[in-house]
Image (cartoon, rainbow, N blue to C red; front, side, top):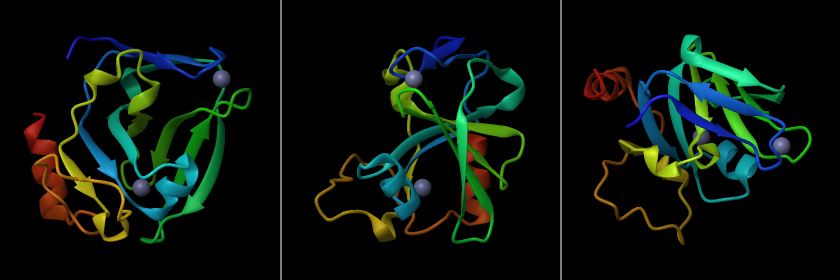
Length: 148
Ligand SMILES: [Zn+2]
Ligand SMILES: [Zn+2]
């Protein structure tokens, strides 16, 4: 993957650059991601916050995850594009919605998570591993190890 990564919202009010590659990348089929996106799942990569430069200000909406942790979803207040996710679980990382990348093909998903709530009409037949809910610690550490 060529660095820096760059991307932004549909209207251009928010632009970002990221000088580091993702710690992990997945397709999340949880209900929160489905409702926030209006789509079947959220393709998201988590990068180090310290590597991000953001121009413009996203509006954040907090939701309580099933785990009890807070997840903040950042979107453009002008055009509504979903851009960012901040999660208590990974305080040093920032989620970037893959479709906001200038080159979305830089997204290299490692796994499907929360497939227990995946929609019946959404095919997941791409040979990636599946996890029915949130990954356990061992699964999560294996994902991180793949990118180290
Ligand atoms: Zn915008
Ligand atoms: Zn999700």
